[in-house]
Image (cartoon, rainbow, N blue to C red):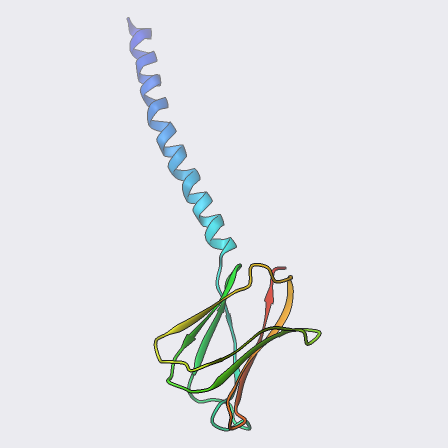
Length: 137
């Protein structure tokens, strides 16, 4: 009778251990997924108001993910040209936008090659905000 109680106890421990192991493995998987999709902020330089001065306000926040670039607009602006080129100067993206504070733009980069890229925001007054980022690697 004692061995029967012991085996029921072992069986109960086994049934309790399985959900715990599944829970721990899901945390490990979620952590690896978050790491893979980790966001990288792009440091920006320059100014839209005066090309010779570093911007005292932030007009854009650029964040690179594995499959997209997200641009958050922090000011209301008009006729801003966005260009993204690679190291060799090949143009990957170009658009003229009218940013509205609180809005954002998402650019699909899932088919772009791994490498270094340059993003720039220019206006008709000659102002320019720019930064560099890497995809992959």
